[in-house]
Every structure is written in structure tokens, then in C-alpha cells.
Image (cartoon, rainbow, N blue to C red; front, side, top):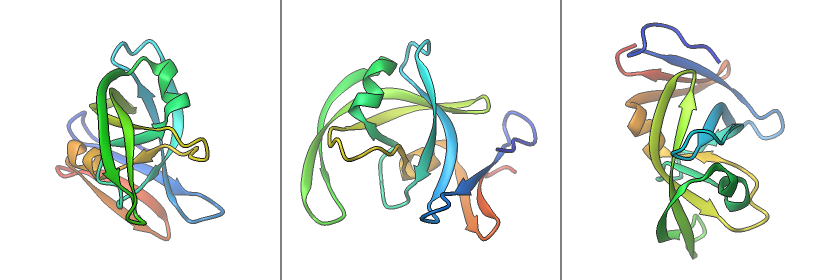
Length: 139
């Protein structure tokens, strides 16, 4: 990852998953207490409208503040109810809080960063053959 400019301006570089071509960004996720945080390779999913989705078994040790249960429509049209919690995502000193969707399906092992995450950063996303870049609007 690359972070350039002042704290108000940033540019981060991600990479592609070698097997699928999926854009990935290394981030730190935590609960509100911040003493329990983990670094993960998160998939940038522009088809996910939310902030962050992560497996519930990975999220519980972080101490997220549980918010409730929400119903979501999946890409295949099915609906699913998931717990939600308040947490934070940090990348090289830039941190944003938001609602995490806690996925209970044991087959889901990925952390997803959605469109609400990008909007909260007020950032643009560029995906090209060189990789993935997220840049602040001021950059």
C-alpha cells in the first residue's frame, strides 16, 4: 500500500487476487474499543452496498458493538437476515466507523468492503491492469 500527501489527502494501492482477479486492499478492522484489531486482505465489492461484511466468527473477538439484525437481498434474489455491529476500518492512519454485516454462513471466509466504505472515505476507486488504487477526492 502507498499513502502519499497530507493526512487530508491519500492514495492507497491494492492488488489483485492472483487466482480470480478480484481487487484486494489490506486493512485493519476493529471494534470500538480498538484494543482488538486484525489486519485482513479485504475484497473491494462494488456490488455490496454496505460498509463492511465479515464472517461472524472473525468479527466476534473484535468487540463490535451489536446494533441489531437487518435483512439483505443477495445477488441471486434470496433474502438473508444477519446481525450487524458497529466497527472501524483503518488504513495507514485513516480510520472510518460504520455498520458491519456479520455473515453467519461458515462457507463465507472473506471480508468485503462495500460502496458505503468508499463513500465514507469520499474516495474514488480505479481498477486497471496495474492494480487497484483508492484516492481521496482532493488528491
